[in-house]
Every structure is written in structure tokens, then in C-alpha cells.
Image 1 (cartoon, helix red, strand yellow):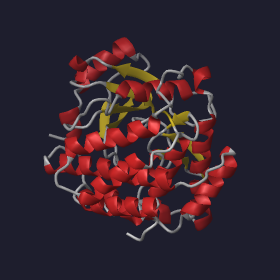
Image 2 (spheres, one colour):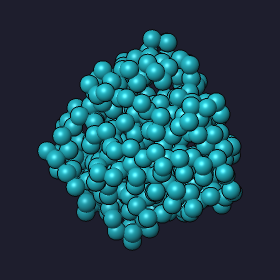
Image 3 (cartoon, helix red, strand yellow):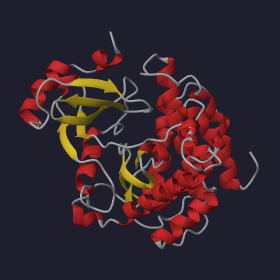
Image 4 (spheres, one colour):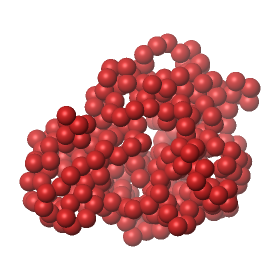
Length: 342
């Protein structure tokens, strides 16, 4: 039986679409889309068009993780702003349909740059234009007046950084497959050096190149930012710093050993930070804490993916390398926070 058939009951989906998403009419097919390391993402095709369905992963669910309702809410609210998103279509929170909640958005045609091979297809100028366009889209997101689009209660900006440090430590305790002293030291230093938030904004929580759909004819144009499962109201510099962390080769095993974001065809982290500072008109100041937090967060996420892989709960390929990234990310986080070479 195919992965799609195992994870999606197309008959149940069709009946649900008839009642709650009538634009998705007729028989539909489903295809698991490549690339996701958390929520499962399927392309739904029918006589009237194409859509994307997202549902939580198999196993490993934790409180507040993989919240389909939050993801759907922020995408729906951002539609019509300067932030490129897919049009939200429907949300199902009834587990009787597929066994888990799921959301549906309109499919956005375009190019997704996941691997170094994908990036090699772009000229160097196109790769740089793509990188800067993604930073500009992030700055546009952080400039959205969230109260005005109905997201005033989408999160609590005050205390965001402290909650992030605590949340990812709690998540580590849930998913850890081993002891990792560097990660514990990194957590301790983050807790000791906690700053006051720099500002309040909608944060995506996972801005990287493979979470963007690009115009196939113009890589400097982002058609949609996707994968909003970690979005909330928080400190915009945390978004920026995590984006810079994705430039580190330590991240590459998380995406199967060929992550486009680490390629030297993209601008250096300092150039990306400078572009963000100009686009956002923010004074960045020292980013040491934010970078350390970014490494801590992605190390814990990678461990969770590795744990699901070890338990046979991942769908697709490219998961066997993820676990090797975790110690490297923890060491890089300590180096970023302390200024020492890892």
C-alpha cells in the first residue's frame, strides 16, 4: 500500500470536502510532497484544481506542537497583506475524519529550492536574489500590524524568549535518545543570559529557503512562505537568527545531507543580517543570544526527527543522517553564545 493510501482516507476526505470545502469537488488524488520533516504535506488534485493538505506527523506529538489550527489561522489572517501566503481553504479539527486534525490551502505553483542540486540550477545572481527576497519577505512579515489583522491574541510577546528556552528544554526531555552535555550547557547559558525582547512581531519560526515557493521565472519573487506551524507573536530577531543558523553546514544532515541553505552560492550570514537591518529598519545589536537560541531550537527539533526515525515513524527518505547533526548544532550554539571556536 502506498504511503498516501496509508495516511489519507480519500473517501472520507471527499465526503468532508463536499460539506466544508465545496470548491474541492469530484474525485481527488493525493501525493505526499517531498521535504517535510515535521507535519506531513500532501498535494490534492481534482477536476477543479489543486490544493495542499497538511496533517501532524506520525507519533511524537507533544502539547502545542503541530497545531493545525494555529497554522491555518495565521495563514488566513495574512492573506491580502504584503506577506506572500497560500489562500487558506478549510480547517478540520474533527479527528473522526482522518484520525488527526488537518488544514487545506490552495496549491501555489512555483519552484522550491531544497537541495544544493536545486540551487545549482539557478545562476549565482539568481541564488543571491532568492536569498535576499526571502529576507525581505521575513521583514515584511515582522512589519505587519498584527492587531489590525485579528492576531492580537495569537501569542504573548512579553516573555517570549524565556518561554522558548524553557519550551525547547522541555521538548528535549520528551524526545532525547541520548545524553548530550553540550546541549545542557547551552541551555544553562541561555537561561542565564536571557535578554528583554527587542520588539514584538508575528514570527514564522522556521524561515528558510525550502519553506518558500519561488516564481519559476524570477527567483527574486517569493510566491508563498509555507510551513507556519511554529508561528506566534514573539521577538523578530529570533526569526532572523534562526534563518542565519540555517546557513551553517552543521544543519545540512537535517535535510538528508544536501541542504540548499548552507551553500556558498548564498550570501554570507553577515550580508543577510545587513539586508534585514535595512529592510526592517531595525537596530540589530549583538545577536549572540539569538544565534545560540536558534542552534538550541534546531538541535532539539533534529533530535525529535531522529527519535521518530528510530521508532519507524517517519514518512519518506533522507532521515538517516538527521541524528548526526544534533551534537554539531549544540557545539555551534555554544560557540555562537560564547565566541569560542566549536
